[in-house]
Structure formats: structure tokens, C-alpha cells
Image (cartoon, rainbow over all chains, first blue to last red; front, side, top):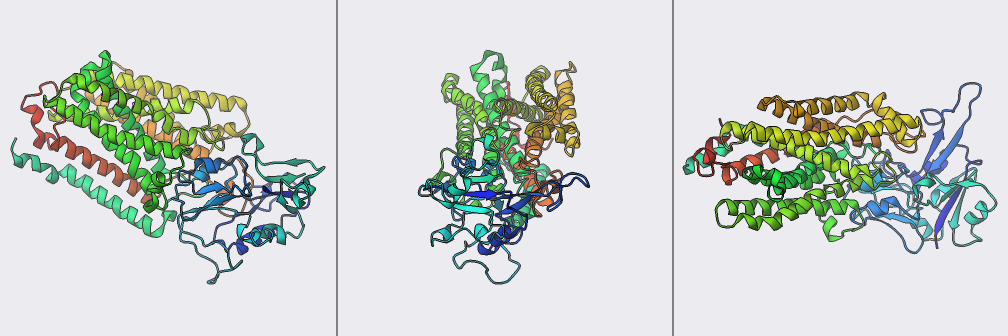
Length: 205
Length: 399
């Protein structure tokens, strides 16, 4: 089994719901985003490319690419980040992480976040899933494909709440999975494919 | 040489200054431990900074010192430096401790888990290789110093140093492998090239020889050793050759980046040459050129060599500084994200007061250890091994 995701860039409207869904479901600390909708264009988020009247808005949702050949896994000196044999998900073991940020340097996608301060939240009670990860000070964290949810047969939070239904998720080894059906017959790209990391996220064009 | 003069080291003004700086560093580190790495100017892009720069610099000095020390026993052309090898081996060991241990120790978020690197080692990680190499530097440096002292005391023959010299020489060359933490990252085009390991070796030799020139010049003045101006000058010329190599590497990278005109590496080079990083880049170039001129000119004055050495250490520091910031502040994906994840927000990297405090403290601690070693161990003596000047430990630092 090999979990993967397809994101239809034609359907993504840049609403950031997936980012917020992720943040909320995983009870992410302030300032930390595992899943971000980047704006292809201006220097600030949600600003268009080009000059008036020839402007264009387009978006690129980016979370951990759960690479088949993950640069972060190779780099970690203590094996705190590893690829799960059973489903190819890249996991970060907070209890093992020494906080050296070698993985952050190794990742081409900048999807790894470090807890520079004690995890703090905007509300004084935990939000999201009951089994959301417990965040730790001084460790690196990132998207887990919502391992706690998929263990219960649910889908990752980001794709469940996407209003444009732009995300597809499933087993890449199963030809009948949602993700494989979505990819079939479509042109797709993978992020920075030339780096040889072989991401498991497909961007449908 | 009475017991009284030996004890003097702990009351010397220089020792007290270093001790105070080390304590100030400890306070800064304590603050960082309690409030977190948020007290640094690091972020999820510029995730490494002054501590890793210090780590690279001192690893280089450790490696270069081992190469210098062993060369005196392996190569005829370096034979004249044998009397000074006790100092260089000891300095190598101390810098190994500092480079290896402390700069990494203060950089990692969970220093109490540092033993995981050995206990649950992931042997495919270049950072694990670094840990092993740096441990080797400390062990080889200490063993080498010990062996040299045994030979000095006449308890062993000089020929017995052959084995440890080869081990130290090869260990020193392994500084090339310490570059793999950077050179093997496909995500970092500026680092991901085969010149990096060789550049690390050249930088190590420049930094180590420069550091030794400064130490030797000071000790020469105090009478701790007797090194001729020619010997000092020759060290400068050797360092100059490697500094010239570093200049070629930098110029080569600039030419390749500017010629390409676009692409990942070109973006970084433009950022350096004429972008936000320009002041840092041009400071680096000026330091390399000035260091080179001071090293290769024919002026035999010690002050020229010492100034050249100081400028060259700064040049190597800037090379490492720019290597880190130019790459980390220019990520591959440049699209705008939320606050904290938007590359457009990034300026240049300037270390915070806490980072500077911790780093100065670590260097001060290293200086303390070197002072103690010079006073307590029989490192000096120079060519006149039995002369009183050579053993004048108590006053060595005061004068």
C-alpha cells in the first residue's frame, strides 16, 4: 500500500479551507501551518501575478509530499523521521527528534516547521480531533496525512473539507482508488521532480 | 619554575576576561534553553545560523591543526615545525571539542537528547558521519598531544609518532566528509556540488594555519616558543595558497551563476553579488583578497603575518556565513504563503544578541582551555627545549 494524493489545480480556488482544516484538526500551535495554499503571483499571499489588466490568480497547495525517496529521512541523524513500510507515509517521531533541523534543510519543499517556542494556541482548549498529535517544544513537525484519521478509516482533514473538491486521496497501488481514478487520463506534475525525491502528491493540470 | 608561578594562570587578567565571557555565554544559553530558540534570529527558512557557522569554522581549525601537526612528522618540508606540534595538536583537540560538541549542542532544540545520535544512530545521515568524525578529532587530538609530550619527556622515540601521524593526517582530510551535511542536499543547489568537500579542506587549512600563526606569534613574543620570522612567514604562504583556492571557488561559482542568467543557482548568486546579500558577499571578497595580499607579500614583519591571519579567519567566517544564508534565504519554492512561510518576507540573516553571546562564550571557553593547556602542560619549549625561557610558563601569558 502506498498512500498518495492528487490535487486538481483547476478546481483549487485559493480559499485556504484545507489549510485551516488541517490546522484545526491537528490542533496546530500558533504560527505553524502543515498545509499551505501558496499564491503563484505577487509577493504577498492572495495577490495576483502580472500587471493590470492582465492579472491572473492561481494557487499551489503544498503540504508534505510524502516522497518515495525522501531527502529528510536520509538526513535525520537519529531516525526520528522515517517512511512507514506499510503505507509509505513519512512520519516524524517527536519523542526521538533532537531538534537539529537537518531534515528542514534537506527538504526541497519547505514543508517542515520547527517549534521555535513552546506550543501555544489562540484558544485555551485543544481543538480538532480527539487523537490529534500532542505538539512538543523544540521539535520539527509536518503533515502526517492525518495518520490518526486514516487509522480509523477516515480521510485526511484537508481533503474532507475542500469546498472545490480539488483533492483526491487513496492507495496509489490500487488502480481503483480515488486518487488513481483522478489521475487517469490527466496531465499532472509533481513538485521539483528533477530533485529525484519522487513525491506522492500529483498536481493535476 | 615554582608551584606558585604555575598556579598564576587562574588569576591572570586574560584568563579572568575569558572566564567572564564564558559565564556570560552560559547565561545566554540558559535563557535560550528556558525561552526556546525563538530568542535566535532563526526561522523555518534560515533554520541554521551562527552556531552552524561556528561549527564549520572550528571543525576546520581542528582538522587543519591535525594536518599541520602530522605533516611535521610525515613530510620533510614541514620538519622545521616539529617543536610547535604540541601546541597545534592541543589546539586541534580543543577546537574539536568546541566545534564538535558545543556549537552543535547549543544549536539543537533538545540537547538532552543528543545521545540519540549514538544510541539510535541513523548511519545513512551525514550528520551522524560528522558526529563520528568530530569525536575522532577530539580523541586523536588528545592522543597525539599525549604522545608528543611523551616523546618530549624522552620516554619514547620520535619514530613512534609515525602511526598516530598518519591517523591524524587522514582524520584531518576527513574534513571533506563533514561538508556532506551540506553537499549532499539535493534541495540546496549552492551546496550540492563536488567542489564543496575540497573547498571545506582548503578553508580548514586556511583557518587552522591562520589561527596557529596568531597563537605562535603571541607565544613567540612571550618567549614560550622560539619561532623564526621565516617559519611564521612560510605558514602564511601555505595558508595563502589555500586561500587563493577559495577565491577561485567563489569566483567560479559567481561566473557560473551570472552566465546562466536564470535558474536556481543563478538566483542565489544574483542575491549575493547585487541583491540583499551584497554587503556580506563583498565583505567576503575584500577579506579574501586582503588576506591573500598580506600572506604572499615579502614583508617579514610578524604584525603583517598576524594581520593577514586575522583577516583570513574573518574571510573563512564570511565564506561560511554566506554559504549558509545565501542558500537558506533563497528556497526553491518562492511562492507567497502565510506569515512565516513567505520567502518575500526574508531579508538577510543577522544573529541575535543571544546567538552572539552563546557563540562568544563558547570561543572564550576554548581560549580558557588553550590558556590552561599552555600553562599546565609541557607544550612549549620550542627549539631550546631545556632553556629556562621555554619553561617560563607562569609568565608566558602575562608578559
